[in-house]
Structures are given as C-alpha cells and as structure tokens.
Figure (cartoon, rainbow, N blue to C red):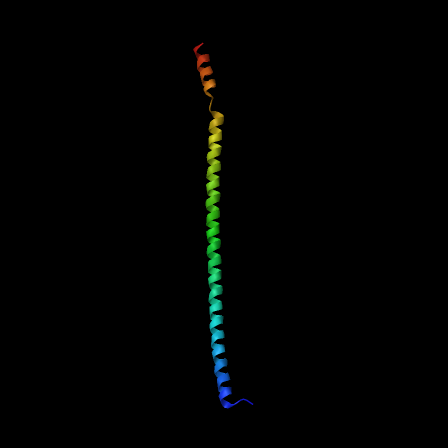
Length: 89
C-alpha cells in the first residue's frame, strides 16, 4: 500500500502531466492554424507566380506572332530592287 506522501506526490505528478498535456494541445492547435495559413499563403503565391508566367509567355507569343506577321508582309531587298527596276522601265 502506498503511503500518504507517495499518494500526494502521485497527485502532483498527475496535475503536472495534465497541465503539460493541455499546453501541448494548445500548441498543437496553434501549429495547425499556422500550417493552414502557410498553405493558404503558398497557394496564393503559387497562383500569382503561375499567372505571371502565363502572362509573360502570352506576351512573348504575341510578340513573336507580330514579328512573324511583319516578316510575312515585308519584302526582301531583292523584291524591292526588282520592283524599283520594274517601275523605271
């Protein structure tokens, strides 16, 4: 059988363990909230980066298409010379 002193010590240990468990639960809840915030923040950042790259590549494609159109419509130096020579005749 346990002595009165041992019972008192066991109660104190149990009280300390219970208090520590409550603190751990509180910290766990805070960590979960932080994880969710970080996930949301990273998701927002990813979407922002993705939009930036999509816009950038879209601008590049648009610029390249404009250059291709200009090149299609432009005449070579040989064609210009031939036109000028043909007009003088």
